[in-house]
Image (cartoon, rainbow, N blue to C red):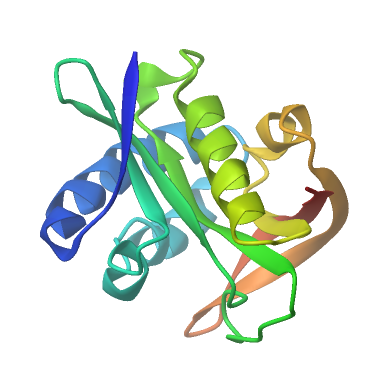
Length: 165
């Protein structure tokens, strides 16, 4: 069905293309066009350090088409803070043509299994408004609405979520 593998630096261009396909289409129902104009150039780019960290994964279908990407880190996004036993879901995206086909579920199930293997007890997530129902279905609970500073006065609305492992 799906093949999940760790991303490498050679995958940055493919992840860039996936993010560029995914976020503009999937976020448009939950964010004002003016917010997307400002935020998309910041959030729709692969983060080279993240893609090459060893815990960022790609989901391919049987034909080898990239259908999803995402991962986790011990470091909290933005601050880099590390709390023993906790991890952070990072930069998850699914191709808009693959929504509701199990791609995101397979990816997050893989992330959860991997974090458990690393001895983590809790996962945190900064979710887009759009992805809150998905993360709820994956066992995450919303904690509060937050804004993620993207630089130059751009504050992107998101939701902090977490789940026990």
